[in-house]
Image (cartoon, rainbow, N blue to C red; front, side, top):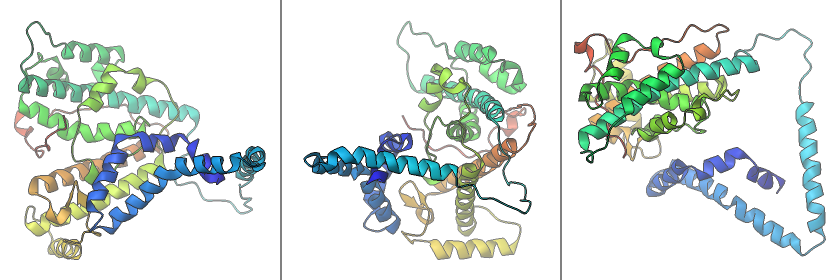
Length: 366
């Protein structure tokens, strides 16, 4: 019972239960519960977390009328102190020399520097995404008379205030300096394809978002996430030592690799892409056959299995998985370097003919 009460005082529990995606994921699993054992397992776990406050309240009501009510706080205090002392004394004594740790041990100063570095990059990405969102709005809506759009000026001033303006590549500066409403659909598509997934990952690394769903649950993008940080920069730029560190990043990277392999195998099987080696085609066919149509085995892209997804969904998920894999590998390399290189960033290619390489993004959320 102590463990249940302790869970109620953990920040992570309330962050998980109060975020909208927890409930949307539960609703998605509920719709699949009749055919997917993973959905049934998720619903059981969700319901257990949901009833923990109820169980704790009923327990307090049960002991309220007995003398045990006065003893319970001391029992919890004793258990908490015992667990705290056992954690402090749990270090193992080694006689032989131990191998070097896999991950670099980060000092508080290292974490602050990494936070600043990642926050600056997140701000650059956020500015481009917020501008893309503004340009999308201007293309789709008619502004009321007398309303003036000032996105361009806000973004330039914000970047200059952080000394980031000169770190932009010339094509990026040119794009930001274009008048509001002057971006083409190609500009918007490039920004969404190249910036949104790294921006989403940086929000997670910086602990602005405390949960990172797998790629199949994040096929859509939302410009509000960028606009939120542009309007409240201190939320992003305040110095902090709190970061998502290497072990968690490695787990996310491995999950992205699994999604990439599954989606790539499906693309090869359907003939959307042709590998150079026959062995790769045979491997892709065997993977697709072993997972195709199996509701409790195959990966999900929104509500569809990979084997049932449309071509647009499949190619977009492959693109996101590949981008997530490469970017998380870059995060790991930066965290493991004592003296990481200077921040350099470029979004727009210098040659206009290269601007249509990436797949078209799935329709953004409102």
